[in-house]
Structure formats: C-alpha cells, structure tokens
Image (cartoon, rainbow over all chains, first blue to last red):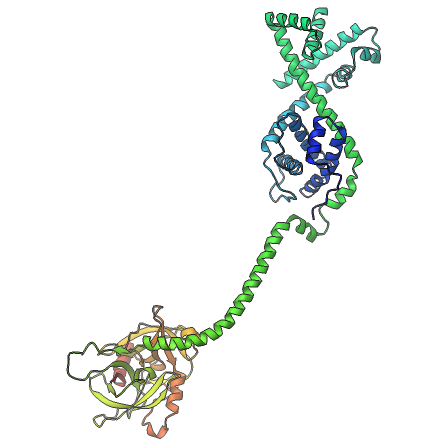
Length: 190
Length: 361
C-alpha cells in the first residue's frame, strides 16, 4: 500500500551532483520526490502536515550538510537514508513531547543514523543561535548584516539602500552592528 | 575607531582571500607579532563560517519552501494519511504482522489437514496395531512362567500360571482365555494348596474370557459365593482390589479405576492403576462393596501402574452363555454381596477360598 512515487524522482547520483553544484532544480526534484514518503510516515505516527514539513526539511538539511561536507558515501539509497533520518528526528520529537514512541508504523527499511542526526542537532543549535543573535540585533543592523553577508551586497549598494551620505558612514554603521552581533553570537556560544 | 574599522576590513579581506600577495604577507607578519590581532582573526573566521552556514541553510530553507509550494500537500496527505476506516489502518500499520499471522493460519490449516489425513491412516494403523498388540499382549500377559522354578524336580511342573475365581459353587471357574489357550491339561489349586483337574468349558477369545469346569472327584462343593457381579460399569476413581496368584500364595493388590477404556481405547476393558504381576491374569477385580467389576487380564509394559481388566459386563455374557441348569448356586448379578460392609481383611478372608490358581501344563 505504500504510495508509488512519481517517476520524476531523480537518481541518487543526480541528486548528489546537483547539490554539490548548488543546483536548485536537483533540490526541487529531491524535495518533491520523497516528500510523500515522509508525510505518510508522520501522518501515520501522531503527526500533522506541518510536522511532516519541519521534519522533512530537517532531514534534507542533514543530507545536504553531509553531501556538502564531502564525507558522503552512497552506501544506501537516498530514499532509505532520508526516511531513516526523518524517522529518527520525529521519534526524538515525539519523545520530547512525551508521546508514545512504541508501535511505530514503518513504511520503509530503516538505517541507523543516530550519529548524523546528533551532528545535525549541534549544527542546528548554532543556526538557532545565529538566528536569535540576528533577531535581537534590531533594525537597521539586522538588514545591513543580512544584506552584506547573506545577500552579498557591496558596501556601496548598502550605502545607497539605506541612504547613508557616504560609504564610510555605512562602513562605520556596519562595523558597529557587526561588533554587537559578534558579541551576541559568541556570548550565546559560551 | 577608524583603525579598528580598517583592521576589521583587512581581516575580512584576508579571510576571503582578497588581499594581494604582498598585503597578505604583511598582514601575516602583523598577525604573528600581535596576539590581539591573531585572536580577532580567529574569532572572525569562526563567525564568518557560522554566518556562511547560516546563510546556506537559510537559502536551502527558502528553496525547500518554494519546492514545498509546488506540492499539492492536501492531495498527497489524502492519499497517505491514516485511513478513516479502522480496518484499512490496521492493515497498513501491521502489514507484516498480518502477513505473518496469515501464514501461520495457512500453516495451521495445512497441518490440521495433514493431521486429519494422518488420523485416517492411524485408523488402519490402529487395527494393525491391535493385532500387533495382541501378539504383544500375549507376551505381556500376566502368565507366570514357572518353568524354570521347578526345573530340577521330577514332578511335572506347570508351564504357566494364572488366577481364576469361582462363578458357581459346583466348580465353574472363570479365568482369562489367554491363560489356558495353549493348555494340554489344566489344574486349579485352591488357597489351601489342593489341586483339582479341570477342563475348559467355554472360551471367548475376543473378550479374553474362559470358563473351566473342575472335573475331579476329590472336589467338594463350595459354599455359596460371597461376591456378586456388578453389571453396571465402574466409574473412574472407584477403589478396587484384586486377589491373584503371582506367587504360590494369594496376593492382594489395591488400586483404582483410572480409565474407562483399555489399551488404545479398547472399550472392552478398564485401565486400572493397580500393581499386578505375571500370574494375576484372570483374578477378580472387586470394588469396596465386594462386587466383581472386572477380570484382570494384562498390563502395559511401557507404562507403570497401568493394568487392564475385562469389564464385568462380558463376564455376565460369558456366564449367561452356559446352560443355567448346570450352574449350581451361580454367581449372583447385581445383588447385594455378602462382603458388603466388611473390612478389607475380612473380605479377603472370606473370598480367598473362591479364588484359584490356574496351572497349565
């Protein structure tokens, strides 16, 4: 009764190469290809559509980091890997909500991925810290930093966008923002 | 302040590899000489890496969200969500368990079928078995082989021995057919040790019953029989005892009816939990009230304490089959026996004159 995945599922090699080349198309195919599988798992194990989305995206991030980290070997099918990671993440969430985790309805083979998931959790914590640090930075600092570091705008663009009289003023502003952000970020790490 | 900003910019350019070779060399020199600068470089590097990861994941999430928008989540979840019907849900969740259960069921049915087939075979086998068991029984029959015992004496000695009991006071003795089956001549010996010649009068191989008639001028009439025959069947658990001649003196054996059928479900016999030995064959089996409920005729060689006794009903049939006018004071059926209410030792005392050793030559 498992749902037949559509034929648009890319081959595992395509996905790995696509992710290494930052191909959005490969990611799209991967995402849409295996989403039903994870949705089925979550819906059948005390979860909803939103849970499925969160868990599935986390699982893809795990896979993404693993591929980008360069230590990814295709020892199993991507499908099995994604399923196992999603399953592990969801079981952890269920435990945190002190819901029952026995009697899990499975639809695929399961790999042991505890290590990968734990590694991911640490990275995820860092991600959250950066997010929190940026949030607490306030405007306009947050946007300036995001524009510079995430959207890769030049100082000149930022100067124009925020209406600073000259680039030096913008640079000074960015410097102040950066110092505050670093402080927030590093103090939360320690 | 200006210097700080300049330094930060240089560090950033250094880390992103934007400095020229000379500038890089100069900066590295500065970094080596100034631990504060070095620390700033390391810290900024960590920060930049974290920031890059943050940016990557953020981008990835955006891409995934846009991919998510392309999906028709409602349609997919309608397909895969737990079915509202409980049966379908159970089926989906427990596919493997159900498969296992089903295979067990099939296996069980196959086994049941084969057992049924087997039991058909068993039926024929049993019939065969009965023949075999009859052979076995004749070997296991409680015929005492006293051949060896008296070998040295010149007196002709009995080949086999068994037990029997009087069914009338004028010398009709009932025993097992198998005891006297191969007899050339038959003698019966009472508890006092006196032997009388007897001849076979009636045989019933099927029920393993034989009736002998004492044919000896020295034989006096016996008194009226103290026991009666119980025509009704005995129940499981009924306390019974037997008198017999596994040795030259009369021996009492005590036990209870353990099954209403004999060997392999033989309905002609009871199974009795009673210690019996070769020589007990043909001995009466009595209940506490002094009614004969059967005749000991064998035991199972593999099971301890499982003896068999021909049911009293067949004794009655045997007694009825001989002309009634030839029986003087025959054994009463279904009447109150004289032994009723007596203690066991008194019963035995009264009975032993009517129980005989059968000697076969």
